[in-house]
Image (cartoon, rainbow, N blue to C red; front, top):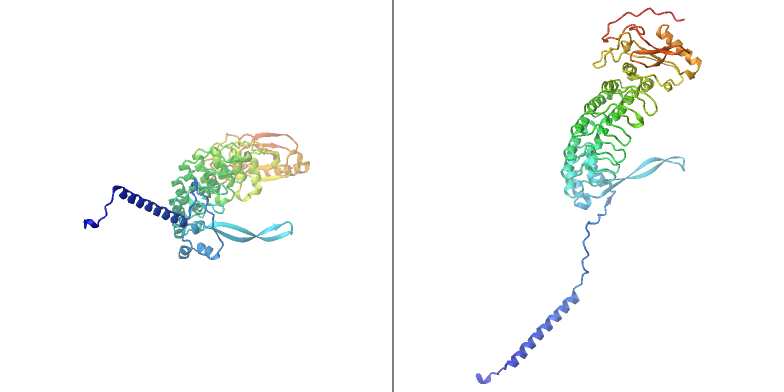
Length: 477
């Protein structure tokens, strides 16, 4: 057995081991070459941007999709909006509107595109389940599509449940729309108070102004006569002296908007709360109008009495040179149903100055001052003795200014003598409280005291003064 073996030397073993290593290296090289030939080399990865590029929105004009959203069909909404891309797609509607064509000289139908989102439709119509499904599928709560966000529509509708849902999903309560308004500015209805409370509870800025006019939520609520909203904003730190870009304060806005008689009690409550919070009744706003100017121009006797009680100046002039008395006299023709003669009597009691000549307008204005302020809770007929004791006893007659012509002056003088029982016509209203400026058609005017009952037989019912018989009236000349 040993004779059949082959003896290997050390050099032979080394050569065999070296040959085997060379063969293994060659096999690895060939395997690597085959792998490189079959594998596609990828380019080096580009550096990742700091901000991902905005996603291109998808547009939808399918009426079936619109119908599912506007009707609140949850099952169809779930079948259509399944992912983030569809939940954020832009819905386009095309409506035709009548526009004037100067080229054709007539009204023509012009197509107008309007854009909105599925979440905006659900929030505006109060479909809370549809809105929750869209938010869970990735709809952006702060996406401004068509000029507004979903929270704007929920506050304007108002839809408190949808507003709470959007705020829970991280909607910004201070997001500005394309018009520069925040959701709190759109709480303009009496039933929007819960939405306003939700917005303030989630961090809405109560003194945030609009982009163009710098109106705060307090300005908006005061101009709408929303007393509950005004009280809410004042509790959350709203500034009653904040001015808009035109210089208007919330009190100016409330007095300027109080025009219709049914809304007078609401605006009176708004003014009371603003004045109690420190609003300035003498602050002049747009065109130099004070709150008293606005109240007198609208024939608001209650507002005028409240402002005068808090120190409003009845003699201040606005940018056009008019006093509150001038504005009240204009209201005789514009708002006769609100009986602005009571405002005139109230201004006389508080020392209103002479009437501006422009108020006469070249004609004859003849109005009686009623007893609107007699028997009231705040204003009492208590001028000095020997003067006009009750504004209900006064008859305010304004004749034409001196340049209006002799005929108009004689007409005014005759009408005054018929009304006053032989006395001469008042040239202007003003002077000290309780005084009338009396004078002839061409003579000078002088302030004289008016005895009680000299201009009217007796004060109206409810006046605190005793009734006195009227003196005998002289026959007209």
